[in-house]
Image (cartoon, rainbow, N blue to C red):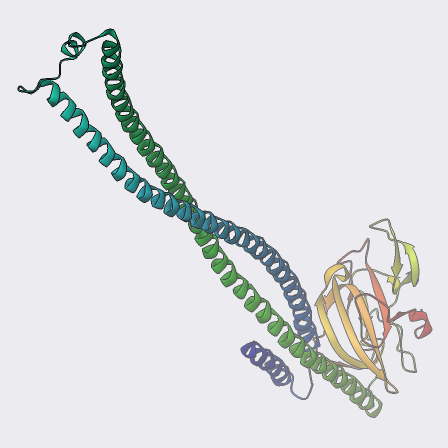
Length: 427
């Protein structure tokens, strides 16, 4: 931006110096170039303001996205915390079940010891019945009875022994079955708890993975946010510098307008001091009147100052001047002493000349439009009544005529400075 300031200052100086060099002794006006540059600066300020507004929208949208993702991360953190608690509970249950298994193993050892002892009793009983030398024969026991009462006693004893054997064998089978059942239940319980723990750990891993992706996205968005903020600040800095340049340019424009006014005043003084200042140039030009202003061209007064229906566009528009109709090529004179501030084509005016005048310290601008020929150049001093061009029909025109305007102050496109020429010039 600093380079831009230097370039702008350089351009202005070159314009001033170059116009002075081309027309020695005459300070030509670079006002038009300065105004163009001012217009560019206004467009640039509008673009910068639009860019800042856009960056604000992008920053707010990015911030909203960051907030949404941060809410998601907070939800992940809560879910992870809940999962950690569930894992702790699962581990606690596994530890408890492990303790139960340890206690069960002690019980199993006791049960196995009892089973082993019963096995010894049963083996001894079988051995007592089968080993030679002292066999136990239940039939011999019954036949050896001395009386019926002794038989009954012997039978009861044998039945008791047989029942005891059967009970021992049944208890042995029941204890073994219970042992297997207890083992199966505990192992199943432990397996389920291990599976629950595994699922919880898988859920935790998934949550951590998703949170990690969200963290990466947040990092990316925060980098983008910082970039947007920097870009916005750069635009604001550039806008501030553009305002500063615009202020300097505005001061240069004011200075140039003052320079033109001074040149016009000096030209007026020169006119008064020159003996032959009122030359008409001959031809079809009207005679130069006395006083400050003179009629700019001969012809028929066809349209006055004020509102009218435009002959081309058909709409109500303000006519900011007066029209004098005559043949193409009819001479057009400078209505007053001054300095040419514009000479050449301009939009609907066609070929147009603008002259800046200074009358008793007051600046005026006269406008001569739709010309077929332009005979002066920007920066040239022209005395009142000097031929400057010829009537034509260039621009938005329906026939050859001179469109003549008078402005109090500098000419403006919007037209508030325009006044009725009949206040100053008699047609």
